[in-house]
Length: 81
Image (cartoon, rainbow, N blue to C red; front, side):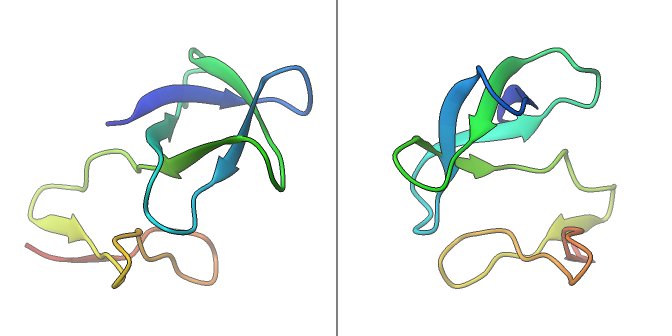
């Protein structure tokens, strides 16, 4: 699990989703408790969004660059463990 964050439109710490696999691992907090962050196009702290643990018997699929693969709907792709 990454550092828990909550997305806000403005006023949070500026973050940019990393495209090279280097950055602070973060997890979007479903319960609303976490560090307030605002996603910006450039100049923010680089972060890597880490999903919650995969269901038992499954693993998240990773791309060649180490990033988590997602489907067209944005859901993380799973494979059998």
